[in-house]
Image (cartoon, rainbow, N blue to C red; front, side, top):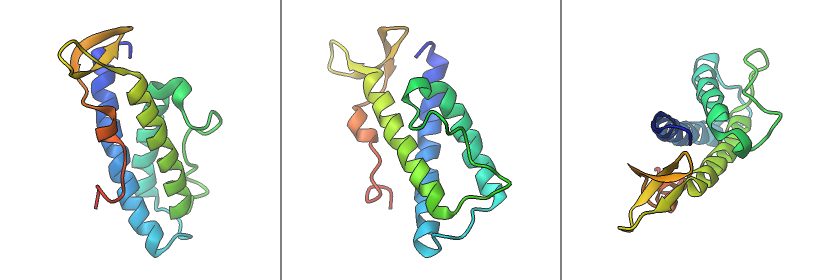
Length: 132
């Protein structure tokens, strides 16, 4: 992370990603091949665009930026991609946090452990069971 604002942005986007995956997974269970509506896709794409900038080399697919709103993806397609972004986000969180002298998990900002509490990265690992 380059600045503290990046940490706050990542944490917000990470939560949005988890919420989107929960919602899209539910839709995919009911109607996996139905296209996602443009309204939902707009918000998913905005989140992915911001995540792409923060994740940089951690992005799950270097040639994927966001979904095409003209050829709407299916619910299951969106679930597949969101799950990959969540896994990449977990790797990013794991690599950008460290325990400080008091055994607190903190974000690493500009190469140094900051005073921003991150929590144990495994506590943020996505689990569909946890999010029901």
